[in-house]
Image (cartoon, rainbow, N blue to C red; front, side):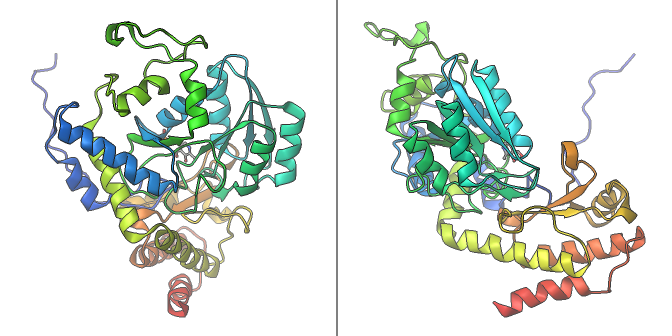
Length: 413
Ligand SMILES: Cc1ncc(COP(=O)(O)O)c(C=O)c1O
């Protein structure tokens, strides 16, 4: 019999440097913002903060979209809200799959009663614009759903031309920018992206649990054709739209638009601490400047990659299309599936790095350099720790070669 109460100890986690594919260390300013006292969700000051979040994320997404807001939940909550609200049962949804998250988009589309079709490429490669156009021509989808950067494979799909292609064939382009936003360019208006969602825990360096999304007026119009307002909050005279009801209540963007719009029609209770976190993440990014932040991610990745190659490690993925915030490397055969190296990195040096999923599980390591973590000192710490661990685990490297190569990149800039 257990003697109650059982309280456990106060939280006291080991200090870690999170250099996996995300989550990454949170900006201290964001942690402080999260401890800001709460207000009621209809407090005029709090609704003003909601408005400010909309203004901030319009700048982050480089968009004029009025409908720019947060979905409470991790990045897949944003994905699910977007897909379930735009896909009408029976719509054809094309998912070009180049990694784990393409499969996720397909699965969510299927759960939204879409007829799903997909094209696949080898993990680590991307699609050419011609391949994408051919698939759209053949399948005539109403929606194309694709990730910009897929952390599972560390490569980035070019989207500029895809936006134009989708426009030409009159289909909606949904982009999952969870892993890329902030560290990689994503001007959604310029690239004709109709609807996009992201998360905080990658380049924005916030905690998981909030998903910024944005969509055009045309997409809003399409969603409003399916608007069914909850009976308990419906004002007299409001009638439901004649389109098919959106299958999820929580992820119903028609109702979320009312909640975030001037009517402030109640839906869920806004997750205030996550709203504060999202607000601070955007403020930090915009203060640095989008281009500066992207440049920092590019430089840091270059330094890391140069160091890894100088240690005779082989980089994974199409060299012309790597994400600027996460690097894949083949696990050398001397290190088996790489698990011992990862646990030495974590237990002896306090540095977390990742492996991958599916066909890449135990085949590659993934090292993230995102947001707060994306800095020279962390690259040098990671390379020197990795050198030690690799040599102890049987993969011999030239002493100091990795750190030297990384230093050289910084010195030439
Ligand atoms: C590209 C991409 N999409 C979606 C997700 C899912 O995000 P979450 O775990 O926050 O739901 C991730 C997480 O790593 C991701 O990298």
